[in-house]
Amino acid sequence: MSEKSFDEWIKTAESKLFKTDHFKALGKEDDFIFQALAFAGKGNNNLSLATTLLSEADEVPEELKSELKSIQEQLHQFREKLRLVPNPPIVGMFGAKDST
Image 1 (cartoon, rainbow, N blue to C red):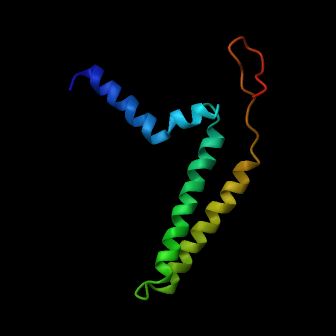
Image 2: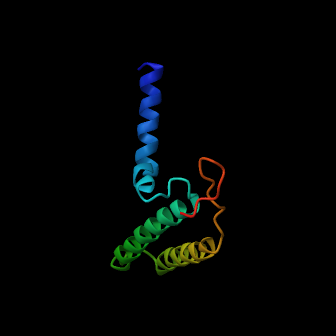
């Protein structure tokens, strides 16, 4: 694999991983707090699914089920705190603050 094709592969993988096209379409490509909240929300949804599945697994000790619920609650609380962090103003091409 040439260096150029490797660099292109990295750029494609990064775009897929960080869903840059989706955030760009929303005008949020530079809003890292928004992006972190989106990914943390997806993580919270996945934890919820895991919690639901484990609730049916009798072989899993209640202590572990409770621990997962606690992690899910901590993630929820983290997201609420992160929402309170102000985003820095976006500076447009000519240095003026962008109102978007």
